Image (spheres, one colour):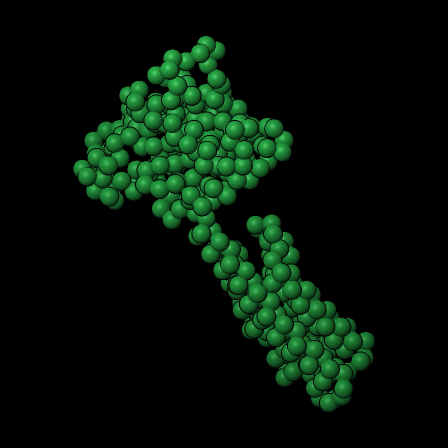
Length: 332
């Protein structure tokens, strides 16, 4: 009974749910009291086995829904195996209890084959349950390692590796469907002076603060990534260049409003943004799209910073002068 109770509390803790100490302790105490009473106070084997079954099975029943329907929605193989094993344990306990109530002797006193088979079955299921718990822990660890490989440890958003994976997927999807998507490249203005003046801890806090502000202006499905230092990118799926400019303006405005409200030792954050859109010339090469957005970012920096610029891939309507032939893109 104690093993079932600890297993149930471990499952609750594994999924981040509060442990029901009072329910568990009350269940075990009542079951133990029933076992002792029907063994010493009033000899009744069937009721004693019923009390034991309740003490061992009820905690597992209370935690079963977490294994078969976890909060994150995805049932891991280990959780599925553990849930099936728990159902098997509960089934065997019910068969034994119902059998005893109907007159079939499953007690150790009789020393019969029924009891031996039942005990061996429960032992096998208990070992299998431990194996299921081990698989659950390994699956959780594998997921955490995968998250660490794709997330920035300072801000918690996607890192450069995750960004390139997402851009490759979006480029391939756009090339198949012809539907464009937009990319924002964001750089914090004067970030080096913030580190030099206030220290790197203050700089890190500015990066985290900007991340929170930017996420409030993004849509569900948009991905914010930190590519290194004070540089960020935002992937805007199924978005045109105009829609990308609208998002860039929103992010820029929230940073301006936050900077305007800074007082005392608050550090104002200013940003520059470059906006680019996927086209057939980009194809399945994300670096080309990043380069287009970078050119727009440089134009925003050149225009005085704390602004955004848009990379327009359309060719000019009139022939360019020979001296301007080096630049084939215009910025707005």
